[in-house]
Each structure stands twice: as C-alpha cells, then as structure tokens.
Image 1: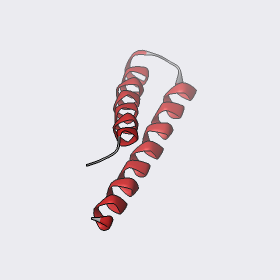
Image 2 (image 1 turned 120 degrees about the vertical axis):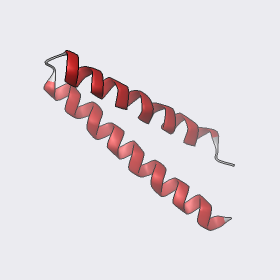
Image 3 (image 1 turned 60 degrees about the horizontal axis):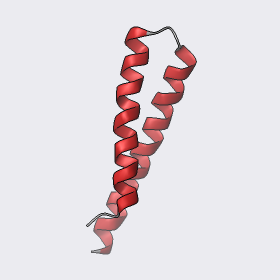
Image 4 (image 1 turned 90 degrees about the vertical axis):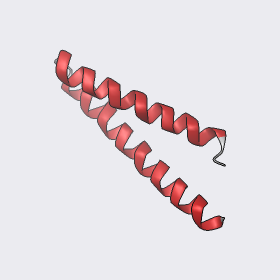
Length: 58
C-alpha cells in the first residue's frame, strides 16, 4: 500500500499535465508552460523512483 503523500504527488503530476496541455494549446505563456512541464516531469520521476524502491522493500 502506498502512503498518502504518494497519492498527493500523483494528483499534482496529473493536474500539471492538464495545465501544461491547456497552456500550450490555449495561451501564449511559454515560460509558465515550460515551468509546469518541468515540474510535472520531476514529479513523475520522483513517483517512479518511489514506487520502484517501495516494491523492492516488499
């Protein structure tokens, strides 16, 4: 079972994905689009590492 913080990071990563898509397709805010995309990618890498290390511990 994954801890609650994992689910918070997962939710934030999902939200950032939608925000990045919206900003890219419907606005001209390139810096904010890049920031949201980079933050989402960092969160996804953290989730992958966390999940991988949690499976090794079981």
